[in-house]
Image (cartoon, rainbow, N blue to C red; front, top):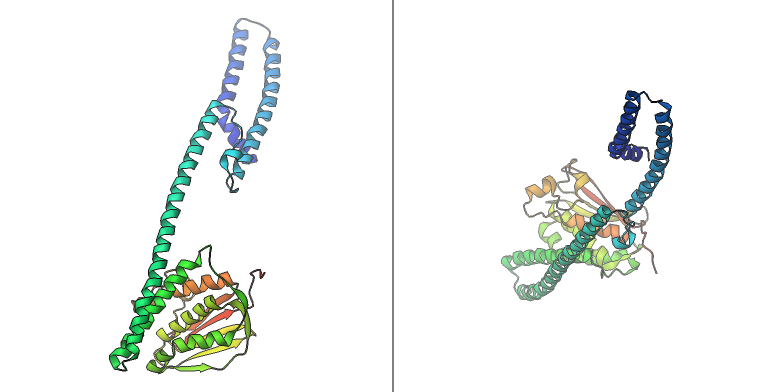
Length: 330
């Protein structure tokens, strides 16, 4: 309030200065005509007292209006209903301009939302339609066991991953996201993900260290399976030799360790940022920086906590703590 009061005085200084000038003019005039100064002093004193009272009441009126306007900054409500009653034509004009600008902003936001929804619908349709020729090509390549077909199958598998990533990205902020939160066998999700990458493990001669963990977790099967697949995909991408180990620590913390190239210390804090690829991503020109970002967002939505530990040339460990669930289960 102190800063507001100082600002108020600065805004009223012209009026206060004019009043002081009038008092001075009266004083000089009485002095020139040799009239008693008391005849000026008492009216000046009375005007000053009443002026102070007026300004105090006026200040609190302006202060209350200021507090009312401040509420509009945080309340998602109809501005027209919340605006204080204008006390001057100038305030009324400003409110009319403000309401016109708000109406224009609503129209722009409505148009932007429509364009965004159209774009989401288009890419969702595209992602679903592209699955048909992918499935057809997979069936065709299954009948040919040659080096070329195996290489093409690997490329097709990556295309399928990218399409699935697009779908997850589009659904992530959708109001119709279909989370089904209940207890699932963690082994079922791990085995399903491992089966998808079995050919890559064999072709690249990467050893898989995994024993059934016999743990039930509260999560969404489809979304959490996507997280496991993304982490496994990264582990295989950046591991040229050695192994990938899947274990559970501290009751319900899923750990996926690889013996790959590791992550630079300066990159480690930012690997879950959208579009951030770091040193490894710059050396691998195909990296998008979206996979781990999606994993982080999905884990946040599911109430899990994902983190990473890594050393250069020694490997990386991704940990997912599944006891952080904070979603209300109906």
